[in-house]
Amino acid sequence: MFPNINPKQMESMMRRMGIKQQQIDAQEVVIKCEDSVITITNPTVIKINLMGQDTFQITGNVSKAELDSTPEISEEDIATVVSQTGVSKEVAKRVLEENQGDIAKTIIQLKKG
Image 1 (cartoon, rainbow, N blue to C red):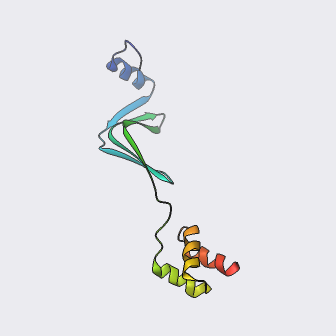
Image 2 (spheres, rainbow, N blue to C red; image 1 turned 180 degrees about the vertical axis):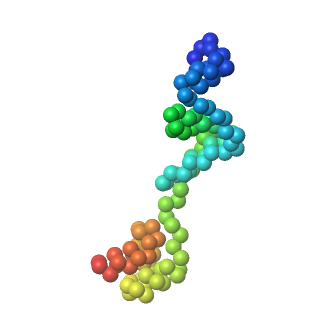
Image 3 (cartoon, helix red, strand yellow; image 1 turned 180 degrees about the horizontal axis):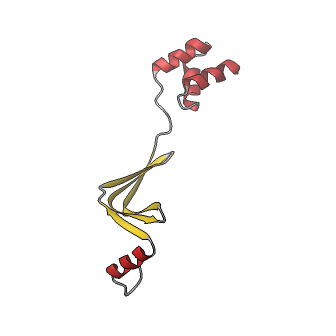
């Protein structure tokens, strides 16, 4: 971080400034986002507390996987929408997928339109 300063001196300076560091023994770090999952393997995790606020510094091997945004629609869900709205199975399934599997929202939408 700073050249020519040994780690003990740095730790002492940080402690005097009210900064506390703690290494966390982690095997894997997973960050779940709305449309993806970020996984960090072989991580080095440092917890830093400054004025009561915890932050984490993470380094390691990063990989990102996109999530399938289409929920699985069951035949039972389709049958429920069909029986409540009178639409075909194909229409019921398509609108359920558009509404991320929300049966109530799908039924209301199909009854309105």
